[in-house]
Image (cartoon, rainbow, N blue to C red):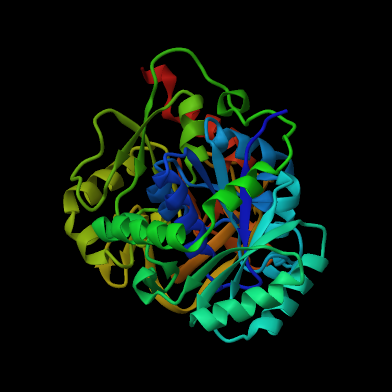
Amino acid sequence: MVNVPRLVIAAPASGSGKTTVATGLMAAFAGRGEAVSPHKVGPDYIDPGYHALATGRPGRNLDPWLTGEERVVPLFLHGAAGAGIAIVEGVMGLYDGRTGSGDFGGGDFASTAHVATLLDAPVVLVVDASAAAGRSVAALVHGFRSFGSVRVGGVILNRLGSDAHEAMCRDALDGLGVPVLGALRRHEDAATPSRHLGLIPAAERDADAVASVRRLGELVAASCDLDALRALARSAPPMAGEPWDPAAEVEDRPGRRPRVAVAGGAAFTFGYAENEELLAAAGADVVRFDPLRDESLPDGTRGVVIGGGFPEVYAAELAANERLRAELAAFAGAGRPVYAECAGLLYLAQELDGAAMCGVLDGVKATMAPRLTLGYRAAVAVADSVVARTGERVHGHEFHRTVTDPAYGDTAAWQWSTSGPAGFVQGDCVASYLHLHWAGSPRFASRMVHACGWEHD
């Protein structure tokens, strides 16, 4: 049994201020010298970037759909090793989970409540009180406390207008026996800017993001009862199970470690920390490169991984780095393994909104689309690739506002129920819109490293 003080920060609906409160709590506890383990329910990549800034530790996702619910507790324990408190930011409304079609909305699976139940963690409900008086707030909290089986251990009131508004809400909630653990005023200066896929990633904002997280920590420290929140976190019972161990999930072979270069920088900010940990456990020497700044791949690169992000925002800069584009095209053309998701797919295309990309996928043109494509996907591999074998099933998600023409190549990568074939398999290059958390398919890391080839070392 392992004791991990923990809280789940949830809300009745999206837009209530979960990210503000969760990130602020992480920064506030870290500012008191605590080792804080940051977590996010669901597949989102952006919030964990802010969590990492607040805590100095990798932001980690807990998603029963992507990894299997049996791995949620082990992955949590892996991330929380050595931490004094764990803060878990929820997704959408407390009970909003996966529907039968794979999207959020109608089911409980993969909801914040589902993860809170798996973790046996108390929930702090963030309530947007900006347009409600005291008794309506109390009715809302009463409903969420009574519905389902999670333990709502307290409330943080957000976007209050005045001292009188706060007093009204506190008085109404006092009769419910649900403690008010914080009360935040409307603070527009603490807001995080957004664009077409949500918040702007922390890695793109640099000093501004650091300052924003610092302000959130100061705001929450001044507005919340950190001692009471700490006591609530400590009320979580000991957890059974062992931490997830990437080395136990993969096959490592002795000998020299083939170098796998992973794209990073402002244009490629989406990735799960466990993917790189699995690559390293499988024997890779994992290094980073920035397609916006680096004119060549790291010396000795034997494989390339290009995850998600916002290449559409940086299309002109990516196009201007002609040397790296040409090197990547030659690298893939020589049969070296390349794995690309979403933004990586766009970067490997012939062009993106008219800007020249790498041209690995000859003739493929990507453009911005009017609608966001978002949702969970149960996918089947329709061809052998550098990571998958024909017929293998995986759970992933899509998150993009672009389309490619064509949508798939002569040899597609995947197929799922909401579309026909999708993605491209071209030699040892595989590229598609499908995002995968490799803790749910750890064999992908072993196969990727194996494809880099010990026999050539």
